[in-house]
Length: 299
Image (cartoon, rainbow, N blue to C red; front, side, top):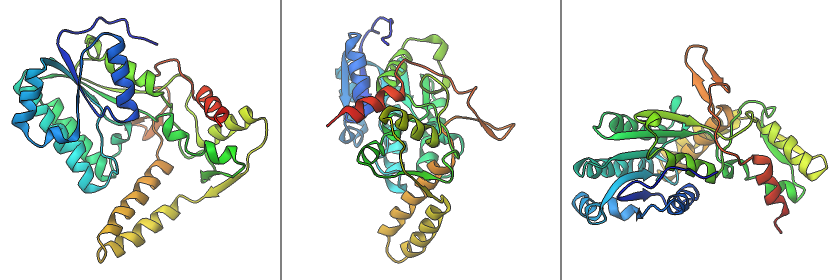
C-alpha cells in the first residue's frame, strides 16, 4: 500500500533507521522521492553539531523511530527522553515543518520506566510550537513471531494463563512505515495522537495458536505459564538488585514481560476501564497469517 502524497520540499531526517520499522520507513520515504538524512545515536550528544548537520542538509521534517533497546531505566531516559528532547530542541531552533514521533500504545497505562520516559517526551513535543503527529502502534508482526520457529520444530506454544488474557491488532513494518510517512502531509493527522493497528479483528495468543495450527494442518502442543511467575521473579531480582545492581535490570525485564503478558495492545477506554477493539483504528493490507506462512516456509 503506497502513499500518493507528493514529496515535501527539503529533506526528511530519520532516526532509528537501523531498526526494522526505521528501515521500512526509509524505504517508504525513498520510494516517494524524499531525500532522507539518517541520524545515529552519536548525533544527539552535541546539540550545536546536530543543529548544524540538519541545517546543512536542508532538513524540513523529522520522523523519529528511535527507541531504547532494553527498556531499562537508564537506557529509557537516555534514548526515549533525552535523545528525543535534544532532537526536538534542534528541530525547534530550525523551525522544522513537521515532527512525526513513533511512540507506543502501551503508554496509555504507564507502569514501566520506558513508558514514563516516552510520555515525558510526548508531553514536551505536544507543548512545542511545531506541527506534530504522535503515532502509537499496537503490536508488530515481529513481536508476535518469536514462537514460530519453536512451533515449526515441534515444540510447545507457550501461553500466559488461558491464552486469552490479551489481544492486539498487529501491523506490519511496511504498513506502519506508510502510515508514518503519510503523517508528513496529512492535515487531518496534525497535532494528534494516533493509535493504529493492522487490518482485521484483534487477535489473542490463543488466536495466534489457532492460526499456526491452521497453516501447519496439525495440532500444536501448548504449555501454560502463570503470569504471576514473572512478578515473583521481578520481586526476587529487585531485592537482590539492592546488593548486585545488574540484577535490577533483569528485574525490569521481568516487569516488562508481565506487562505484555497481562495488558492488551488496544485503545484503553478510561470510562469503561476496558480495552476497546472497536476504537482501535485499522490500517494497511498486510495480514499476520500471511506473515506466518512466509516464516513457516523458510528453511
